Image (cartoon, rainbow, N blue to C red; front, side, top):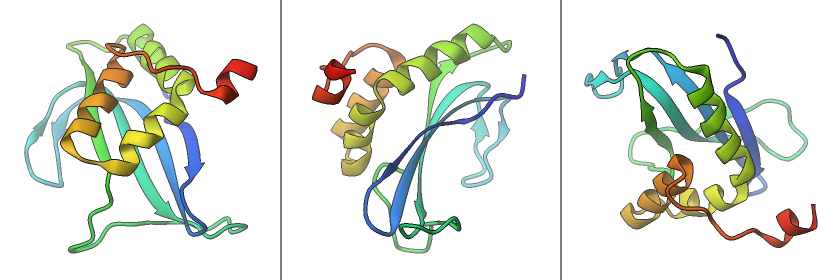
Length: 134
């Protein structure tokens, strides 16, 4: 059941990168806010500080500094693990990775709704020129 979480990495500045992850979580305690995290397939966006040419990176979290588009979304709630559901979400994120980075950069409520629609498959973004030529 162990699969690679990382789907896509995008450099957002000379010092920062954003990683998109898709993973299965068995649920339980959310240690950030002590709520109960449901079982299911999740999408996560995380920003790291990593200068160009460096192999070292550090997670960018801190008191009072909110990075837009950082967090996770429950995409498919599950009662039992289904590898097909994980593969489907991962394929959508791989296919539309660049379209997903745009709402992550904004981070407002409307952008997060658009992001959730893309990840769940409710909305299919228009193909970018790079995707058309490939």
